[in-house]
Length: 277
Image (cartoon, rainbow, N blue to C red; front, top):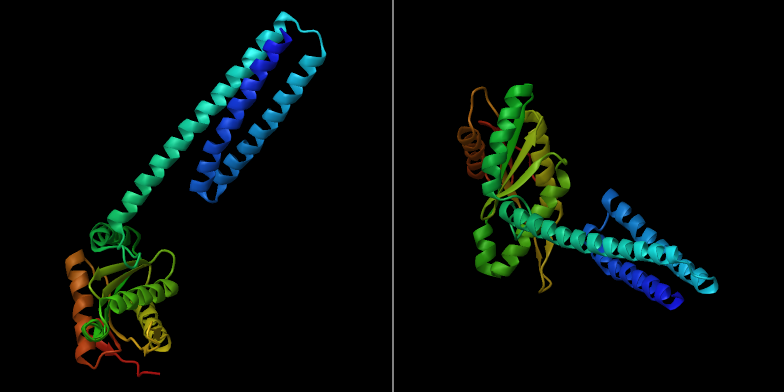
């Protein structure tokens, strides 16, 4: 009977050990956070159970076995099966959730810049407009268009054009708040939605973005340095105004900035000009 008990306990240890790769895959998917810490504690708990199973088996080998020891060993074996089944099921569930999250991200994110796309803007802007109406807090937007971007594509090629777009989107995202929404609106045009921001707040952000673009040129693979500027239009949501009109006013302000000489910001009908530094 001793050898049977040892065989059952060894099988239980093997099942517990087999659950560790599944737990490791869960930790790899989570990468951090509170859930990661909880699963990590569970991993070490399983390791502790493996050591306890080994101690139990060694003590059974050194003593006279009773029929009740067989029942205890079978319970330990069932525990190993349970832990393995839960770990593998959790790993499969985590993989499915990660795949779903990636698919959802791809639906609303621009693959080149990582910013939100226009499809997401349509839904999110309606939500922000409704929230602004309920709270009475302002809602502003910046419409940003890169100056002479077609010339960049024509002269340097589309690979450099893509590098420029990634560079600009990175600069924009470095300057906005966590609750601001950055969208690649199309081509070389970006939109920033700034909840709880007045027109003056949005203008300050816009001027800051202009300065960042002027002062951060792009190093090209061939050793050249490329300076990029943009024109920006700013608008604040007016009473009873919908999404289409709101964006059109910001777009009109953008084109007024273009007509005024580019590399500047126009605020809702009046030119708020800032000379290049």
